[in-house]
Image (cartoon, rainbow, N blue to C red; front, side, top):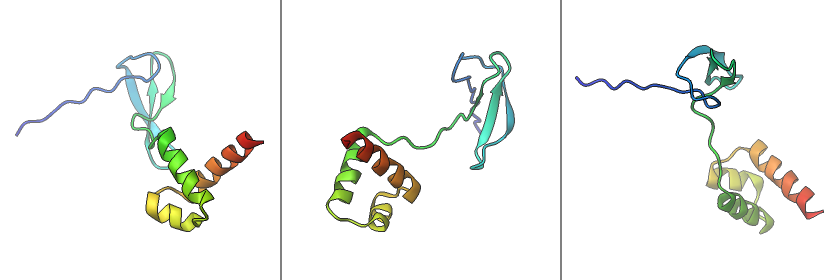
Length: 92
């Protein structure tokens, strides 16, 4: 059996001197760099591209329901609400 070793690095300084340090409120493993004392999550959450955001906001503006958009695109209501607030503030 072949086993693969994975080495994680600090997202700020690039050091390999990191240790596990609890979990985030969302249950993801949190790490602390011993060199720069920064806390981070090595596998961050999903980032949506600007094209995806524009497509989803366009679907909402075409009178799709929030629940329908959640179901089709697989995003949370909280994320969609945050995007809508930002887009409305940018329009003003």
